[in-house]
Image (cartoon, each protein chain N blue to C red):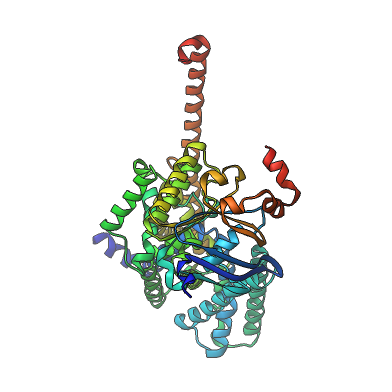
Length: 312
Length: 247
């Protein structure tokens, strides 16, 4: 408690930003698990880039920078982008990766055009809109934290309520459909949850880096566990921890941007997990292989020495 | 109308096309209850598509499917499905018991989680396929045959009247194949209807009592002794059948 008061006296902003980053990491880490397990890691990237023009349009229409309005615009555009990808794949012969690249760059391009139009319009209120491209965590205010908390909470609660349905959708979509679950609807719902996680992170981390916030914690978590519930929990924890540590590191040194530091922390967890995790980790793997080779050698040696005994 | 009552599955005029190319063309198929039926045909004959169309997983361009005279959507609970083993990612973070319990999800409906009773049913199904000692085993650590047994157990948990199985013998060893076929025969003895996509022509007469020969069109369908003839096979496989039979 003393410690906490000491911190508030030092830097109220740091606490607000850390809290926002932690919430953001929790939500995107947990929901990112589903994107990773569905092999849709790049969908997050497309959604975050597609969300940009939504922010510009929302601002152009309302002239407001209220987080809820901008988040709503971003979500709508991100969702349209995801829908465009799904429709292109379903209706044309264009493959998933091409559709993804097309939508991502088209929406991002529209976003950039709109931003430069807004900047040239001389609207006094426009300053800071471009933070959504590269993110600027320092601009997170208390009201942003509240927005992240409420919307992220809704997304996480939805995920928990539909736990069994989403698990089945990801593991075996055909079987899910055969027993009567509306897989297309569940698919849209899951995509919508991802959209929420992504647009909440745009302000802090930015469109360009946001997909890493979704993917990295989940990839790291997968290394440590073979259980879906633990994986979601761990990914949420990694996300939160990356958010807080990235914020603190960047605030301790002037000139270090917060969003990229958060991403670097998250990817550091991935690196450590890939090397050190038991069972799936590289070190563990090497040791096991060496052990296997040695026991094979011993067995082979014994075979050569006394073949009669082994052949009984 | 009386005759209709004795059809477990009735497919009429079914045509399925993927981007203009027909995969199934004008299929008529009646499956009486209590038979163990093999769907046989060359690669690309539409065997998997036929199963998926019966289950409503692909939208037909034309035609109709009835399960005991009613559309599939109202009959889901009496149909069990075993998809191809390769259709899922076996590195998914879950264990054997959890996968088998997915067979209960249809009966559970929305949101409700599986409970002790579902666990018991899943354990019972795992005993039936000889996998009761693997309940907590990570699914990525299963052999092909074990994966297939887990999928079978999941279908058994559905407690269905009709079972549709897509290549349950694919990539399993001889022991597992014997175990699976005796399980399917036991299902038939209990009055269930079992439809199996099958690849190995050598074992059709040993394992099954009905056969459907398929190559985009339905070539023939009926009891093995009348249907599994050289002419029908030749028509299904073209000239290659002689080579297959001589092996």
